[in-house]
Image (spheres, rainbow over the protein chains, first blue to last red):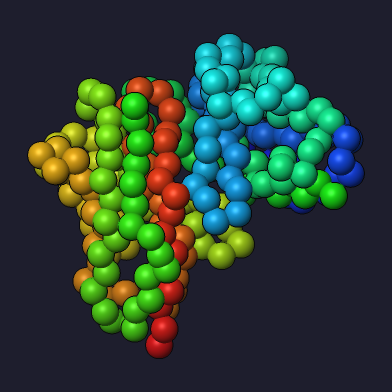
Length: 114
Length: 110
């Protein structure tokens, strides 16, 4: 596609509910990133894929967070048993993966846990 | 470790004023440096970048120069417009992922 697409744009979840956030990267982009952006803060790195391989998951805050990219294209970020502190905007980005090149971001999914 | 430090906002200016938003970084090796902008209700957009020392990135009247000796990448614009009101993020890639600063909100009034 023309840009990175994320869905849903907004999600309200009751505490304890599981959620799944989807990211469609730019076609042909090798690298895919997930970030978490709390209100008034900069994006914080969660995890990174190169094709289908998850190369870095050091930013995932707990084992309730899980990400996958099974065919090296679309990715899903899953949060189990959501807590109020999970409320944030979740950003997905993709890049061509060639060197230290810029990443292109989707509009994000705003998750509110009530 | 790798990190980015930005000046705290908000920065409030009148239209046509000169803008500087300071950014300094800590990194191992030779990172690439970026400024991203987030307009109200929109996603992060790349504003400009520089990949090596003394490179100057520029776009839409904004400029930033990669200064290795001072580990800085300050954002400047000679004459801001109301439409420049947004949050600006300085970022670096030391290896394979972007690391962001906390962002600086710019408010420009007519």
